[in-house]
Amino acid sequence: MLSEYFTVKEAADLLGLKPPTVSARIRKGLIKSEKKGWNVFIHIDEIKRLKSDADTTNMGKTTR
Image 1: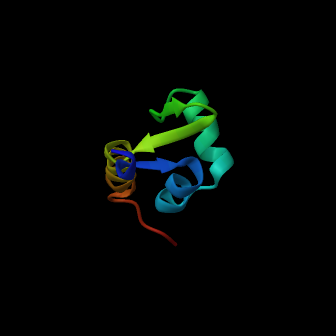
Image 2: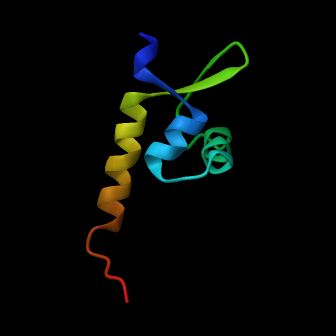
């Protein structure tokens, strides 16, 4: 179902990143995506995984 997929821009907004950053991470293989025609989509499960990874990475860090 297409509603389970997000464009690079939508995914970037959800992840708090800029679209070029998301695109670069897709090219490096850090973010799984699917290409349909000329468009690139990221599944909602991948966005959830990335958000979860970001949350666990930032745990225990303090800001000054």
